Length: 102
Image (cartoon, rainbow, N blue to C red):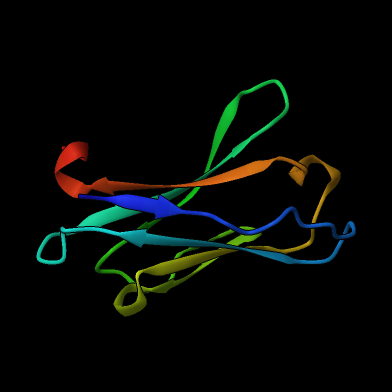
C-alpha cells in the first residue's frame, strides 16, 4: 500500500524569503521506481504542477523550487525561494509508480 502524509501546520512568511514544506510517504514499491510530484492549489481550486522527483535521481531543482529527497527515510521536502504573493496556496505531494506514467 502507498500513503502520503503532510502534517505541517500553516506557514507564515514574507515576500522574498524562503519556506520549506515537508512530506513523508510509505510505499511497497521499494524495488520499483516512482515519482513524487509537488502541486499547489490556489483558492479557486485550480491545481498547478510545480516540480517532480524521480526515485533514482538526485535532488530536483527548477527555478525557485528545489527538492530535498531522502529516499532511505521516505521523506521529501520542497523549498520555495524568493517568495511571491502568488505563492500563497495549499501544497500537495503526490506519489506515483513510474508504470503509471508510461
